[in-house]
Image 1 (tube, rainbow, N blue to C red):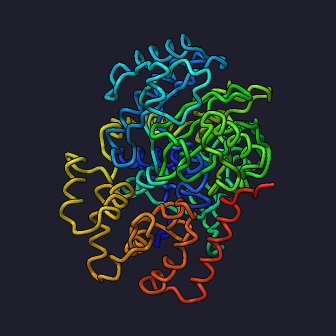
Image 2: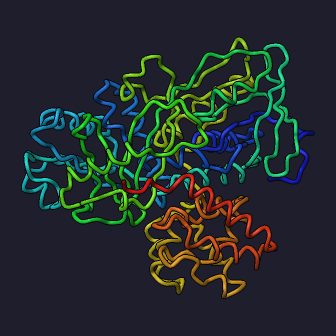
Image 3: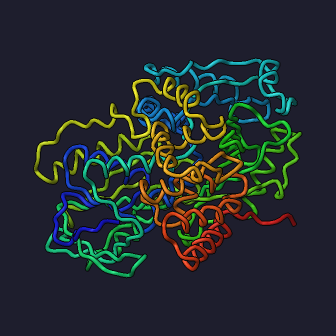
Length: 541
């Protein structure tokens, strides 16, 4: 939140939605000198971005649908993210086992791998290798050996915490002069002729209203894009979003669990899914189901959970996973373009579109689709169009070369080694601070230096320390305990979904942030409610 009166100001650009695409657009626009307001009805990365499979990938599956341009764009952007955010985006070895019974055989996979390597000619990751059945089982001994013919080993990348990637984009936008408002809803657009003149905003924390003017408005509401457009006076828009639900399950390490990520073809429907080492746990998903329900209460249903468990147990017979093995689940709705045919979810393009609402509203844009991998390029394209709307020459985009805040060092590996060696903290805590904050881990320790109590553990599982609670609220725009645990310290996505940490975090807030007992209790209860709704899987029958 900001103290100044934004109603007296006129912005060049208002960005509605602070997921990865919205935060990326705000960062790029602010870096090019535009006066930007970024707002979201929830927290930064409080929606779809956080419910993804957490990959930065080249889109191998898109080759099947002939989307070579999207694959090339994805591979190029993957390289850029590995360079500008090495603390968050890291190489991930991926194994594709090939069985006699599956529809994609060795020749198809091999051809796809060759094309993938060709399209990623400028990559820094290793090229693919084809493995024999025996080599595959040596690398992943838990795999079902019956009918195993071969495997392809290749590299993509993982963004363990897309919440942090989004946040760092928002922080950098703010550092370049952007204004950020979270928990702020667009209640109504005020129009004048063929232009959106202003947006009427409601602060969901205080209930107060504001009116903000801008030259251009960009709707980056993800699956809520159509809902945002519904706030426009006297206007009817065609439906833009036809989202599909993707659900994931999270488990502890299990018998036969692979050290590499597995990219596997499901026997039931032929759809690829992933089994991925993640956050010292395992992430399994995803499903792809047309969704028309309440976007604010998306949950994995029993059928999805059972499907993922069955397919995992099939490919890794020793696993023996049941619903009781599931630590928690999460689901999100992909903001895909609307198509009337409801039978071909997998074939709906994953490309993004910048929808220009001219001539009805010449200064209103909506973003349809988009992936974590290509957010930066989408942002560059959008800001280029904003400058054209403004009738101004655009400075060069620098986001492909400029590291995010947690990667500002000449040598990331050297910094990490030095931090572990010289900071006098145990290895678990050092690893946690580096993987969450990057070079800004030093700032967390500086905050802890004022009181040795702040160096004490907040979470034994991750090594998180108490100072991170202060850092979340004072330096990273957290407004609630959920913001702090789920999207700042990342302790909320551990094996207990933060339920073992929330009381300790509230205690830190009482001691150092001036919360009274009533505020602390409300925050703890609110957090537990959100976890119960979003993370609890159905029990076994």
